[in-house]
Amino acid sequence: MKTLKRACTAAGLFTLAAGLALPLAGRAQERDPDDLIQRGRYLAQVASCNDCHTPGYFMSGGQVPETLWLTGDNFGWRGPWGTTYGSNLRLYLQNLSEEEWIRDARTLRRRPPMPWFNLNIMEEDDLRALYHYIRSLGEPGEPAPAYVPPDQEPATAYARFPSPPPGE
Image (cartoon, rainbow, N blue to C red; front, side, top):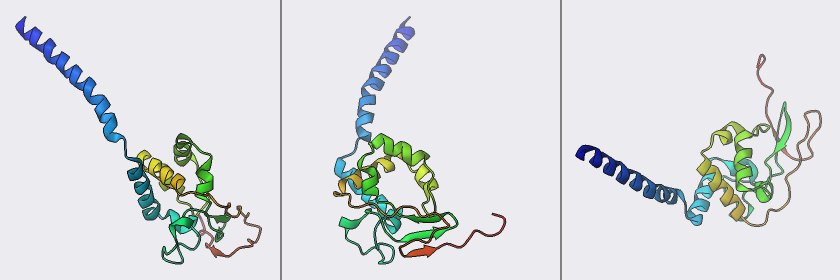
């Protein structure tokens, strides 16, 4: 009987400790908004978001003021799919909730050269950080040029991707 009493008491203490720890674990995952924004800034740089989504970033080796980051670019990327442009991510996220962004980032496929497959597997915390960073940047600006189908000549400067090798 004493052993059963001890087991029940131990189980009760374990349940109480676990119940108290759960809210604390949740708080440990909450981040300071400034930390989240700084993490998003870092990710935008190391994931090369600016290379296509910031005017002149790639060609200047990243020497573009942050006030222009992720406002889209009018330099096109042309290949067998047509011509695509780095969209204005500030404008794109302006009317999306954080949850809509997460769902979108996980499911949408995009035209080349966007590495959508990398975005699809990005950690949720990182997607949230990017969202908060992009939303913190301020005025969204103007949209980037629209997609141009393969049979039409783009009106802007562009880089040409070769056709895929035969059999692919």
